[in-house]
Each structure stands twice: as structure tokens, then as C-alpha cells.
Amino acid sequence: QLVESGGGLVQAGGSLRLSCAASRHTSSTLAMGWFRQVSKNREFVAAITWTGSNTYYTDSVKGRFITSLDSAKNTVYLQMHNLQPEDTAVYYCAASTLPKPSISYYATTAHYNFWGQGTQVTVSS
Image (tube, rainbow, N blue to C red; front, side):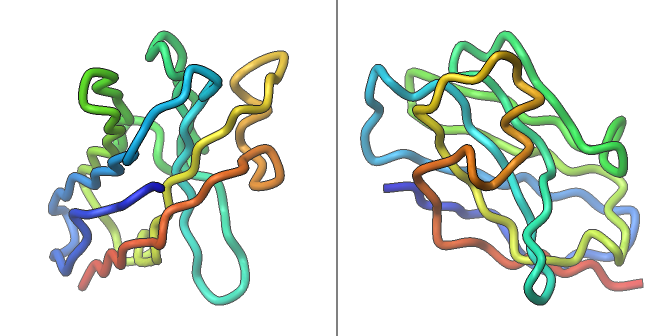
């Protein structure tokens, strides 16, 4: 089970940190991802390997968002800086036990088999 927290309302230019706590970790977890959804489209934001050694971001958040992992706490984070109104969405974390050749493959929702319930992030202008 994945539980996100940390969403809320922030003004443009502000920061938020999302957390995603896994109730248990299995040795088969290979990557964690962050996605966001506005209407029907769920788009990729960031991914990190469970070792924390590799990260991958969508272009629109590079330089503003940082994902990190505390394996001792089974928790992944998404630190978001310089938030803009277009970042407004429901943010989801996901876990994957599916081996992929590189981290870029984890930019696809189909490559995840566990999902959190989502947390709302609203950025006002």
C-alpha cells in the first residue's frame, strides 16, 4: 500500500514536498514513480530506482522538482520548487516490480503495478 501526503494550496513560486510511504517494501520493488493527473490524462513527472542511484524527470519539471528515496523508511519524496499554476493536479506515486532496461521506461503508467490514492496540489497565480 502506498500513501501520499504533503499536497495542498501554494502560491506561484512556492514549494511543497510530497511524501509517499510504502506500508511494506518487497525486495522486488525496482522503481518508484510520480505522476500527475488533470482530467483523464495521467502524465509522468519523475522516477527513481529503489537504490536511489538513478532519477528521471519530465522536461517541464527539470531543475524545479527533485525526487529522492529513504529506503530505511520505505518512503519516496518529491520536492517541488518554483511551482506554477500549470503544476496544479492530483499527484500519484507508484511502485514497480517490473524490470526495465533503463529508468526512462518507468515514464509509462503501464510499467507500474502499485498506486497510491493521490494528493491534490493546487498552485494559485
